[in-house]
Image (cartoon, rainbow, N blue to C red; front, top):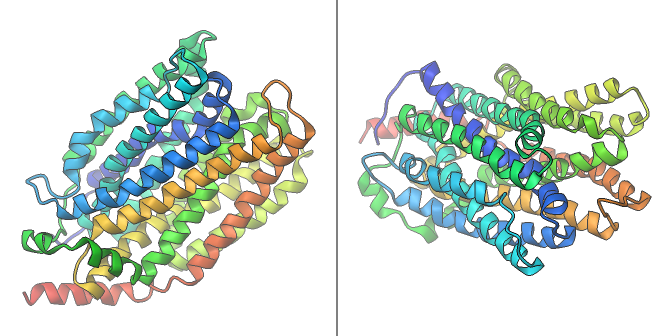
Length: 450
């Protein structure tokens, strides 16, 4: 195990944040706009899209453990995680554009094309983003450094999402000149060029310092590692917390465009709401190191998420209030949610140290791939719930009924409140915060005695 003591440089931390900045130029646009694109531009039925999202994400998520095993078994001159970023970034960029192309085929042909492109895009996203996530515990064991890396990651994620939210609609309209079938793929093409550059910055600047030796890599056993994974109780709690977090993201971002347009009756405000949701995430990421240092990752997250639940409840009573007040409460609620995101990534990295301490193997790839399965399943089900619910309520873009707007309202309020309460429950059962420092000391003592 190669070990390098000391703090990470600021440039390496910023470079690490570029990874999620790059991801969100692509995945942020997909998460925020693909449902709308499929229904209103490509002309697919909402219920068909719900099934598409669910099936493709589940199939895609099944691939994640395979990628995780590949990471754990990799021992190249570029390291364990970095080779995947190097070789899969370009294919990921290509399929992100293909997903937003609209061949003029039959209804069945369109659906097959959507299934293929969206499934392959998701697999390639895993192939790049999974190693990127697994890179953090390879870079440092210091909990404060992990907090800072997580904050840079969340700020990068938020900046990418902010850029996508603010720029997508104007670019689509400007490039397409009213032809969204042209505007969407060209806009995605612009975003992917930016993403490629940033992923290669991650590859060049972020170093793997804590990786298992070639001998231990050869000893890796997939079945044993999977069994150990479910014996890692802190990891189970963080994986469940992540499942509920991404379920909430899938529901909120899936329904937000419809909510602002049809419930608030402010379609011109859609870019602002999407942008502010991500600005709030950025603000939460920036505040997180201070709050988490003071309260701890677990307790800080519980406090922040509890505040978010209360504020979402307040929003229900403010629909007829001045738009500025509603927007301000929405923004503050999402800051609370944003504080939990870097804490979640940092706690996930801590579970890798716990895994090594308890079982003798780090298994970053397996742990991060199963975590990725939980997040993808969450986004898939969240997005599908929105699509199915809209279909059940009889949503049609050209004739929105009161039944449809009631369903949109239920999804927007009750969805995030219920799922955030489940997150809080998982965090209450997470006990690693107080034990982690001693675990790292034990691991260092073991390493020095070899």
